[in-house]
Every structure is written in structure tokens, then in C-alpha cells.
Length: 591
Ligand SMILES: *[C@@H]1O[C@H](CO)[C@@H](O)[C@H](O)[C@H]1NC(C)=O
Ligand SMILES: *[C@@H]1O[C@H](CO)[C@@H](O)[C@H](O)[C@H]1NC(C)=O
Ligand SMILES: *[C@@H]1O[C@H](CO)[C@@H](O)[C@H](O)[C@H]1NC(C)=O
Ligand SMILES: *[C@@H]1O[C@H](CO)[C@@H](O)[C@H](O)[C@H]1NC(C)=O
Ligand SMILES: *[C@@H]1O[C@H](CO)[C@@H](O)[C@H](O)[C@H]1NC(C)=O
Ligand SMILES: *[C@@H]1O[C@H](CO)[C@@H](O)[C@H](O)[C@H]1NC(C)=O
Image (cartoon, rainbow, N blue to C red; front, side, top):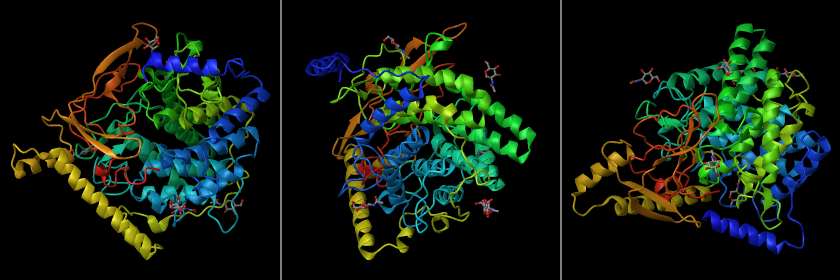
């Protein structure tokens, strides 16, 4: 919606509510009562968008357009809500949601999601379970999967997927071979794995997890996904041996590494490895430096507010990206528990951000739903609402109580969650969704899966023909064309085929020449030369149409000294993972 329309809508809403004065949260970031009060209302508004606990609904799922992974992130946010406030209102719902989605092997690979599930998706559920263990969240009944074992299962299944055949290591984004994105290794998949591994190392004291955390970090640095100023970029493809870096920077990448690095400080401390303590201490500082530089915006040092800089300034954050500040807030706060020297610095940033965030909470039907734009904004509601916005506001407000919150536990310091070092074993190494059908799955399931596969394949073929057949060319030329498409050689291709996925999930293939263009935006404050923040031009990054964390082939890595990149040029057609074209992509069941 154009800005003026959005304004008009906002004004109309406030006129409708004219009998009440325009709502405004009064948040005193120094008062526990005030924080709890505000958080309680934010949580209630957040949960008004979740119906998984209601009759006929599926626990652990959010309605469209929210993906499965975000519901896992939501469960993590609810564990946080209880941890900070002690309010148990949502504990049963949280436990129910987490347990309903564990899948037949108790590793967060439920059959309904297997056609679309990525390592990062599984990782978000795994991190929620890990948090439940660290905070001593209520344990499930004995005959149910336990938090620690669930996190271990996610770790085990992912460690078994570590792929040394390409790029010298790393996890692929997707789990299953035919999923769109299987050829992409992205930072968030490594970030979730690193985060879980380092926290498991600390919780259990088992050095195997720590070795994997080290391996993951070293690989990230080796391949350049983390650069020497600790900036974290999106990912690259296996075809190019991970040299074709996509320079997007998203806040959840740096956040997940930050907390994992802090866990490694604490783990090394307990293990008495002082060299490692120093090493991870430096990495925490480096990550915090880049976090502040890239993901906080403000006129001066004392006034910096969190920003999802790749998409927020141009109103192009998609439904996933709208939630990322929730995780950066969550992980920055938690970092202070294991890296206590970061406290003053982090606290200030979270205070500013919480104060700015609640000013955004003046929209929606009830007049108090939160928008996205905390930074660089007078406080006027930006006209958006959603699970991501609401969760982010709640997490950043809660984070202001971090000094009062309990230290996370370990197995040796009061942790009560039962583990299983070989959890998830039955799923280990599975990269083929069909193989799994030989497990506990019924005949009916199998027939259903075969049918779905058939339909998807048929749709794939039809759409490919539609997209690629060019009657001026021979079938052979068309095939070459197709091959170059799927093997993602940037080559000389300039046409971009973007599949627009409409609200009902149907795909509208569209041949267009859309290119992502770059645009200079305002400067980010800094000492000498004002560096620039680069963002994308409006039609360049169609939010929902554009896959989240989607691999995009780019011609060159733009040098973006400060402020973040978000505008790689598209050089080859790609298939939207939500479209039936993406067979396994994020197709089928979009939830
Ligand atoms: C899978 O989908 C079916 C049908 O929609 C539903 O009944 C079931 O609860 C779902 N399972 C999970 C784990 O989401
Ligand atoms: C691929 O990259 C890795 C480092 O990321 C390097 O060690 C390896 O030699 C490269 N392989 C090829 C075939 O270039
Ligand atoms: C973080 O930034 C501070 C201040 O600019 C600098 O002194 C320090 O060396 C940086 N730390 C790392 C690890 O880059
Ligand atoms: C900050 O706001 C100004 C004025 O609306 C705008 O021109 C600029 O692009 C914004 N910068 C960022 C990083 O949001
Ligand atoms: C965790 O602690 C319990 C009792 O405190 C102990 O029996 C168990 O062996 C510990 N597990 C690990 C992996 O250290
Ligand atoms: C440590 O973790 C590894 C990896 O999961 C596992 O194979 C091993 O059995 C664990 N060791 C102990 C003592 O639990």
C-alpha cells in the first residue's frame, strides 16, 4: 500500500476509535512491573493470532501466511515469556505445540512438513526445545519426548547432514535432495546448528558438541560467510563451491552466532580452557560490533534502535523477515548471561529499542497492535501488523528484564531435562523424503504422498513448459535453456522469471525482466565519512514473492563498508520455492 494510503487508513482507524484516546503503551524500562504489564498485553495480542490450541486446529501451526518454522520460533518466544515474567498462562499451549510437531522420530521432522523442511526450520524448533531445557521449563510427561533429547535429536540429524563434498563442509539449506535450495548453503542453517551445538556443549559438558561448534565456526569463516569484521552474509551455492556469496545481512544470522559464541565462552570457562575463553570472548565482541554497526540505527551513540536494515527502510520485509528482530533481541539479552561483560552495552541498545518498539504498537483493530518500524521513525504506527511484529515487540520488551532473570541451568546446575545422546538416530542421514516412508507410515500416507508427488511433478513439468518453451527454438535449445536455469549458471541470462505466489498459494508464472536495482539511502552515522546504507528499490524485492533467505545468484559482491547490503542483481531465472514449480521447495502445504 502506498504510504499515503497507509497513513489515511491509520487516520481512519484512529477516527473510528475517536471515542477512546489513541492508545499508547507507557513503558518504563526501569520498572519490572511496567515491563511485565506491557509484555502481558503484547503476549495476549500475539496469541490472538494463534489458534493451534483450539478444537479442530493443529497444535504448533500458525495460520497462513506464516511458515512452520515461525511457529517454532513462537514457541521459543512463549518459553521466554514465561521465563521472564513467571506468568504460566501459555505454558500448556507451548508444551502442546512443541510436542505435537516432534514427528515420528522425535526430532522435529513431522511428516506434514517433510516436503518443505529446511535445516534452519528444524533448527528453530530445536532452539526452542533447548531454551526449554536451559530455563527448566515444565517437563513433559515421562512417556513424552523431553526438551534436551529433542535438541540433541536436531543436533544429531544435522551433524549427519554435514556435507564435505561441496565447499569443504557446511550444511545445505534444505534437507531433502529435490527441494529448491538444496544447492544452497546458507548462514542461518549453520547459525542454528552452531547455536544448538554450543549450548548443548555447555548444558551437557560433552566436548563432541563443542567440536562441532568449532568446526561450524571455522567453516563459516573459511568460506567467507563470516568476514573478518564479523559480518555475516546470507549464503552461496554448491555449484560455485560457495564462492558466489549473496551479500544479504539479516539480523537473525549474527544473533544466533552471538549467543552461540557466548555459550562457548562459558563452556570453555567451565572446561578450564583459557585460550578458548579468550578466543570466544573476542568473537563475541566482534559479533556485537557488527550487530551494533549494521542492525542499529540512530543519530548518536546513545540513541541507536534495532533495524532489519536489508528490508525495513524500504518497507519490503517479507512475512519471515518481519520477525527477525525478535530473535536478535532474544539472543542479545541471553548473551549477557554467559558473556556478562557485554551487559551495559547490550542493555542500552535493548532499552532504546524497546522504547521505540512500543511506540509502534498503536494499530490494528484493537488500536494497540505493533508495527515493524522501530528505528528512524517518529513513533507513528507504520500500518503493518503480524505475528513477526508482535513477537519482536514482546521479545525486546521482555529483554529489558534480563538482569532479573535466572541464569540458564546446565545438567550440573539444576537442569532437569532428560537427554538422549543418540536421539533422532533413525532419521540420521536421511536426505530423501521417500525413504522415510518405510518407517511408521501407513499405506494411506504413502498413497497420499505418491499422489502429492505426482501432482507436483506434473505441475512442475507443465510450468516448465509454459515458462521455458520458446517456439522459436528447438526442443534441444529449450532443454539447454532449462538446464542452465536449474544449474544456476549466471551466464549471460538476463531475463528473470519470477513466480508470483498469490494469497491462495496458486502460482502465476510471470516472465519479466525484473532486476534488483540499488539505491543509496541515507547515511548511517559514524565518525568520519558517513557510510551509506544500501537497500532495495520498491519493486526490486517483492516481499512475499521473494523467498526468504532465497539463494540469488549475483554477479559481484558489492562492497558495502557500513550499513548493509540487500540488493544483489538477479542474473538468472529462479523458481520460487513456494510455487508448485519448486516441487519440494516450500510448496505444497505452506504451513
Ligand atoms: C498433519 O496434518 C493433519 C491433517 O491436516 C493434521 O491432522 C495433523 O495434526 C498434522 N500433524 C502435524 C504434526 O502437524
Ligand atoms: C572449495 O572451497 C574450499 C574452501 O571453501 C577449498 O578448500 C576447496 O579447495 C575448494 N574446492 C574447489 C574444487 O575449488
Ligand atoms: C570492537 O570494536 C571496538 C571499538 O571499535 C574495537 O576496539 C574492538 O577491537 C572491536 N573488537 C573486535 C573483536 O573486532
Ligand atoms: C530514515 O528516515 C529518512 C526520512 O524518512 C529516510 O529518508 C531514510 O531513508 C531513513 N533511513 C533508514 C535507514 O531507514
Ligand atoms: C546429568 O546429571 C545427572 C544427575 O545430576 C547425572 O546422573 C547424569 O549423568 C548427568 N548427565 C550428563 C550427560 O552429564
Ligand atoms: C557426547 O555426544 C556425542 C554426540 O552426540 C555422543 O555420541 C556421545 O555418546 C556423547 N557422550 C556422552 C558421554 O554422553
